[in-house]
Length: 144
Length: 203
Image (cartoon, rainbow over all chains, first blue to last red; front, side):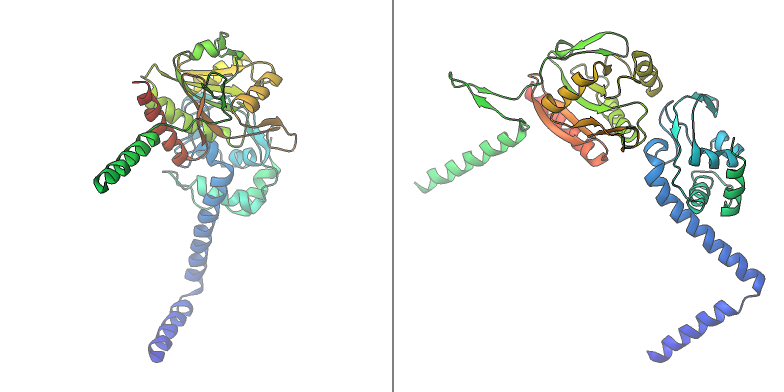
């Protein structure tokens, strides 16, 4: 039993150290991406799902969809700003006009916004890739 | 004797079961001098709906209905309540005996025009689902004294109002027959089953 465990540990160590440095970076990037998705989903459920729904489809013509949304995927910096600062007025999403104000959540940290944005841009058929804290920082600097 | 006892117990069980088929009647009840039981009733009311029509207790004569309290700009529990109420609407859309009454607790912002747009965007018909506005005091009062739920202004709450997420089931005699958490899908499942049970009481 003990020997078996030792063997397993050895394999694990070998697995971890055996890779070239380039590969291990991309592996840790993948882990980070997964983490962002998991954390982002939890934050989404707390802050966003009431209106945009768990499946990202929105609600009728009241709350716009995020799933396969041209408005979201066409300008992700804008989506970052809206999470932080809110939005008012009419917008057109996938050809349908919506006009319900969205309150911003000023207390969200840049990490949390990165996690939420990563989650919503990589769920329900959306495929964008990870959104980093740096991207959030630079987007927030140029909010209108 | 033994057989009689078994029969008696059997009858008692049946009686209990048929009792359980009926929904509970909520609130304080009183027995009058003549021996009748008087139950808590929704008081008379008069509000305006999304079509600018007066909505009173007479609108709900011979109907059962589900009431709730919300406001259109509410960022917290209202959207989820509306999602859930939409399930009730969809299920009973073609049953003229079931109506829905949503009270705005932010009448200053939720004018008739705002409610009209909200209902239209939700895609629901005003014959079935009334969104009403009126004097804020009247709406808070009917919530607290008739529907047994709380609603009040609270500047510290997101959106400025604190309110219950309850759905309240009212029968044709204006009595409260059920209170459900309108933010929980399983509670709303129960509400829809209870509406069926309540409809059966009138068959």
